[in-house]
Length: 503
Ligand code: AHR
Image (cartoon, rainbow, N blue to C red; front, side, top):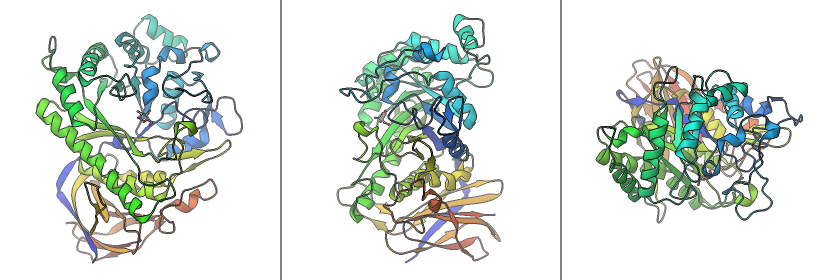
């Protein structure tokens, strides 16, 4: 039996915020140091200490937003260590990523706020900063905001200018801590609510000070509904000065990682298990939205999935959370994007963990080259969804049931969006065996196929890219049968990802 995809152009969901295609780069292993920042090392072309082979690859993705400096790192990071003359910056031990370890290099602070914003400028991407709640203070966070965003004649604004940056950075996105239920201080939801109110109050004082936007605050949510409920409940306890304490946040975050089997060693059941587990991202979003609708029904608080992806057992603290990134991982990412698109009305940002070398990275590097992973290719193929209007998409396909997993795996995943008169459909045939004749039904009259492409036609699901093989993972053209009445049929190879653009 073939699968069917029904795209309802008259049921638009919402605009897919481009920031759903966001990234996350932490001071961890070789993500920043080695992967992005190489300083004076001349084995690769650099600009201002930043390696340009990594930048070139990322530039091609039109990355919309980059979260930094962590992760757990953020809750032991003191931003003033990372500004000013580099030779005067202190070397520190990061409490989280060096815990109990002598072999992890200390944090040299050579890559700090201005280097990060310089990277964002090169990538034409929005910076997203996570402030230190764990062992920082509201005053330290507010000082960081003043240093970055204030255009007046204060010591901090002048200090930024002395550091060579005259115009404010105008950073819009500010995360109030990171996983403060865990590495960020092991706070209870009630304790975090108290901290959140304090931090948000001081960060809010910058409203009206940026040239063309307001700062947007992101609270730490959880995949545990109990945490979210207790946090939102406790937040309501103090409403002095604001009509509602929920005005203190624009977004609430959730994080989700998943694994099944090893990075390259897994059996068929583990292949499907990973796909089943990747569907939990959608479940987390739905749960968080449901809780927000109970506590803050009149507030437009959206969900930011600011860490998501595959975390294989091979990625350990001892190897800087490095793992092989295979076609299986990339196929799971395609399904997660389909789920984000279906929730375009409630998901305002997502940041895959992490951009370079760490976990489900998009770019891997060695000392003299950088290359894209299979997951990079999915970001590239899906790029036309950014900023487009997500369309209700119904998939009729067989499913695979995996023992003990709460959700089944539809063997075809899909989403569709519309922009400038073109309908863009992405789908994956997740079956391990056999191509699938997928009928795509739209209500376009006389649809013509503008473009169609396929990923991973020639690869096994356990394959990962190397510097030598990366280009073989790029998209190829694929033929599409056009019925001329708004219906097209594509023969999607086993374990592949396909895109079709119609007009
Ligand atoms: O991405 C690696 C780590 O995973 C982050 O530092 C933390 O936020 C999460 O637990």
